[in-house]
Image 1 (cartoon, helix red, strand yellow):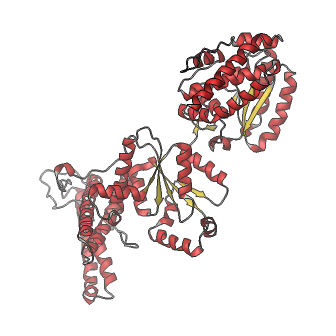
Image 2 (image 1 turned 180 degrees about the horizontal axis):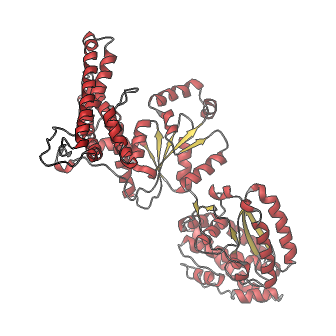
Image 3 (image 1 turned 60 degrees about the vertical axis):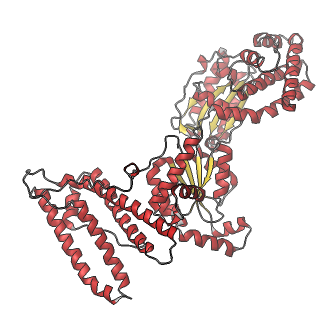
Length: 599
C-alpha cells in the first residue's frame, strides 16, 4: 500500500454495533477489515503500475498474477469479516426483506471510496478534473456511511435480512483455488536475521550454522527459486503477502527435503512489509533477530569508507530495513564483545527450558554416613544463599550410587551467580574440613549464563544430559533453566574431547606406575566411552563400557580386571597386581586408535 495512505474510518452506527460484540470477535473483525483495506490499497497501486508503458510483457504478467492474488485475498477477507458481521443480524422472519449485499461488501466499497478520495486529492494539485471531483466524492462517502448505518440498524432490529456471504469466487483451475499456506510440520524453527549494513547478520547466521547445525539460506535465493518455479520475472514487484507466501513455500520445500534439520536461518531481512506478512503466516515458528550497531561501529568493522556504508544503508532503509527492529522478537546490541553476541545467539537458537529435576538427599546415594552427613551440611549451607546458588549436585560414580571407598572422588557441580561464588568457596572449605580426608573433593563452579549461553565442556554437557535422564541433584531452584542436550550433541562433543583424552592417556602411559594406575584406568574407561558414543552406543559403568568397547570392529578383547578388583588393589596398596593388564589394555586401545586414523 502507498506510504501514508488514509485509514479506513467506519461510520458511527456500525462502530457502536461492533463495540457490543465479544472481545474475540472485535479483534477478529478489526484484523479482517484492516487487512482488507490494506489489500485494496495494494490493488490500487498494482493496477496503476500495470498501466505503465515502460513495463515489459513479463512484468505485465507478474502484475496480472499479483492482481489475481490480491483479489483472492480481498474476497477471502471480506468473507471473514462477514462471518463476524453476520452475528449482528436479528434472526427475523423468513419473509423479511432481503438486502442486495452483505455488510462486508459495503465496507469494501467504503474502503475503495476512501482510497479514491485520497488519490483524487493528491492529483488535484495538477489535475483540474480531479480537483472538481473531490467535493462530489466526499458527498458520496457521507451518503454511503449514512446508508451503511441505516442498514446496520435495520439488520440489528430484524427489519432486513442479509444475503449469504459466501462469494464462491473462482480463480483459474478448480485445483488452483487459493488457500492460505501454512508451515510444514518439518519446519520447526526459523531465525530471520535483519539489520543495516555491516551489523553482523552474516557472521551471526554463520555462527548459528556452525554451532547449532542450522540450514543457512538467503531470502533473495529463496525468492529467485520461487520465481523460477512460478514463472515470475520479478518477485520483488509482487505484494508483500505474495512474497511471504513464496518464501514460506520454499522454506517448506527445504524442510521436507531435510527432515532431520531442526533449525533454519534466513538473511537478510530488508523489507519490513514482507517479513510482517511472513510472521503472520508462521507465528512463533519464525523468530526475527535484529542486529543493532551504531554507524561508527559498522564503518570501523567494514574496513570501507563511511560513504560506502551510508550508500548501502540508504538502499536498505528505502525498503524498510530499519523498521524491522520494531517487529523483531529479539534485538541484539552488537556493539559489544563477540562472546556476548555468541552467548545471546546460542540462547536464541537453542533456548533453555525450565527443567524439573529429581532432588535427592545425600543419604540416598549410597555414601558412607560421615560423607553423607558432611554433604548434607554443605547442601543446607548453599541452600540458604537463595537464588544465588541455582543447583548443587554430585556427579559421576557418587551421583549414580556407585561410590567405592578409597577410590571414588566427590565430583561436585555447582551452578551459582558470579557474585555468590565467594560465599560458595567458603562453604566448600567448610565441606573439605568436615570430610576430614575421607574423600577427595573436586568442585566444578559454573554460572547460569555459561549454561544458557552453552559454553559447555563435553563433560558438563554429559552431566546436564544425565540430569535430563533422571540423575538426582542435591538442590535446585524452581526457576532454574538448563539447555537441552541431545544425544547427537554428546556424540559431537565426544569427537572434540577424544583427542585430548588420548593425548593424556599417552602421557600417563609413558609414566605408568603404581601412582598413576588410578588416572590411567579412568582415562582408559573415558576413552572407550567416548569412542562408543561416536559409534552411537551408550553404556554406563566402567565394566560394561570396557566390555562394549571390546566389540568395536578390529579391537580385540580388553582383558581388564573388574573395577571392584582394581579399586581393592589400589586401596590395599597391591597395584602391581592390576597395573600390567591395565597398561596392556591402554597399549591395545592406543594401537587400534592410531591404526583407525592412519586408514
